Amino acid sequence: MNKIVINKEDFKKELIRQLRASDQFGSWSKISDEELLTKKYIKTKEELKKIPIIADIDEIWINEIKMIFKAIALQFERKTGVMCNVVMEMSHEGFGRCIVIADKIVLVDKYFKDAHRFSYRTLDKLYEDGEKLLNKAHTVYLQYKPCKE
Image (cartoon, rainbow, N blue to C red; front, side):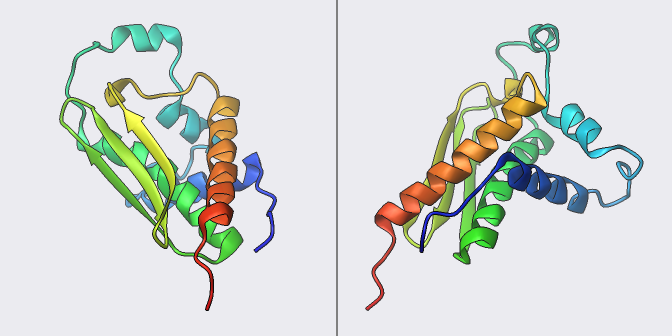
């Protein structure tokens, strides 16, 4: 398996697919992709100031954070053909961990504290982070992939 090209657009498309697929009632059908991503993942400094430092995190937000890592896993699968799993453990206080696994290899390992405050400042930062995590996942997989016998 050679080095593959992964860009921001790949991650963006996959994350939008994930969000649109989770919209059971079509509530977001009239919202543009950028507006949907902004609504879900972008918070200004002013918006963050309104969120308390110590608070419980709800299941909906946990699932929306996990969706970012599902998008990474699915895009990795599309590019490599290697199946991935996403495992996320989060306490009610917003402390936890999310990992993306392929074979027996941990491709992505992200720790959270105060996950109820998790966000990005701009869409470009979200896309850059997704691209960076996908490329890192592929590099890790190439380094540790099982040998075929």
